[in-house]
Length: 258
Image 1 (cartoon, rainbow, N blue to C red):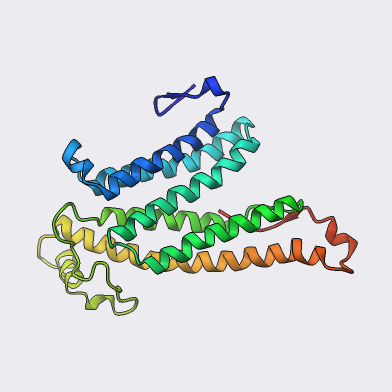
Image 2: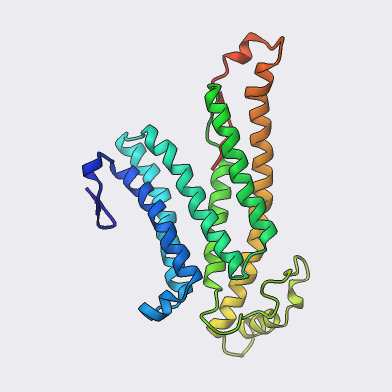
């Protein structure tokens, strides 16, 4: 069995786990493409184009590894361990690279990445207590929002030259975003008689990405609150003196961490 040209059969890894491992190995390549000029200098391909292609491929492996595992009944402990690790590595590496490129504010990335570490830690503690955090729609929504946001921001990267928007790396207006001169010009080209250039599209993509980043931050905080509440109900209260016996029998909490 081969995945991305690699033969995993010698270690007894099935296809879903191979896809997950491939996602982990793609992360360093994505960072190199986003943070160095290797794409333009060696391949003659813009960093944003190669970067978004690599990111989308990695994100698709996240979709297919779980689907294939369930269809083939190949769900394994290794897959359950590696899948969330691979997701967090991919998203964290992409977001940190965007901060370095002045495409995302550091405070938002700290909240998102910090939430991932906090939830993972509490989920591990819950597992040692026999409490399993099962799936809900919020985790899936957050992951999809993250993928779309990162994809839009990568596409807005400037190849060499100056940034397309004068306030790259500075606070982007959350409400009065139309006050950015370049955005007003790009919008007028889009809806007016003027020609819409790729630079105009990148400005519009950047604006959409920054708007969606707020959605990601809010959903991350909301889902973290829900997870903490589920953890408290399933683990902390169960350990308190006088807790009902029925609480100790709880083996699953209906909340999902993605």
